[in-house]
Length: 507
Image 1: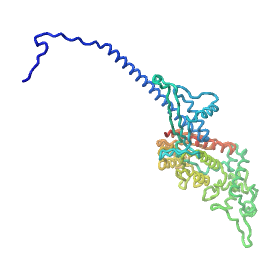
Image 2: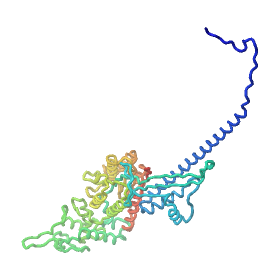
Image 3: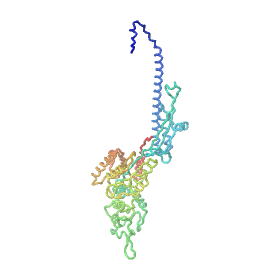
Image 4: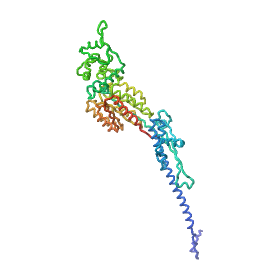
């Protein structure tokens, strides 16, 4: 049987209700304790936030130091190290600059001697494939920075006996590798600056006579100073209009006891008769320059440069110091030297807009074998394959090479050079628009084109448009009175291009 107990108010008698105890004092104690915990947590949060902020500032300073140091590796490891330290100490960490003074060089060395355990640099190379850093002092392309900093101040942690804290950071910066396509002009006009035509065509041609003659003499020497008959370098006047008579006087025709014989003409295309007809013509450049019927190696070398310029006609002309093609060759050599001063893993390709099809030709695909590229450039002559200037075809071959062989992550660029006007394909008007159309296609691919226009005859407007269209830069090198000045300007331009090494923070 279930026994239900009645409530107390139904028991038939009344009971007195007990009074509740007073707990107000305990609550005050608990509240005071919780306030202490909350203040401690707030203090901890403030200090932790501050420590994180200082760490972030330290990371930023070390990153900046690594980038600055990498940018100075081209000037040597010591310069890179001191520059990295300088930038590190210029950046505020914990709302203070670690070192700031006018006499920075001495103070940097003193600081480094006192705090060697807080700053360390390593030069080396960064492997993009394995993502590893290998220390080396031989042509380094990357720098590894590690740094630490003891901060003396905390806000509330001192209550718990913590007076300060330390932060450390590391970073690796390197040069971003570049894939560069050199697109060079080897049209016939690339040898005209040293020809007799410049004496008769240019307003200042007569004043350049000595320079042009000296260049032709040096070209003759470059060819090995060959001897044909009794010819001399300084031309001699022969009045006769009979070729055989002229050849006899020059020793180019002799009697062998049975019949008259000509001294063999040295190259596959041409003849002594063609040379004589060239010099005795009353309307050609020799006559206009004052060398009418004057025969010698001066007019002979000029004959080869002006009339027999193809490599299959006179294959030795690459040895001459013809201008401006020689200036371009020398500048490419300087360019190659500059990009090798730091091992940035750069690659270079060579395109010339000069080919048997009057188009353009990839002479060498992207490679780190810079000696081979330079050797090819040296062995090309003005009008090596054809005489025309097909700028658009050169641009097209350039971006096709980058499309096919450029590396992911490399900076891609084209260096385009010309001394004249676009003449192919079809005609000048079409060729000019064709060049702009091809530049637009390079721009779509994000390939900047650095353009170099050489001399007063170059289409500077077109080259500037191509550079602007692709986000590149245009350099104009005007023709001057001195070939040396002309060459120096070109060397300066190539140095500027070679020094444009993008920096990349890899760690």
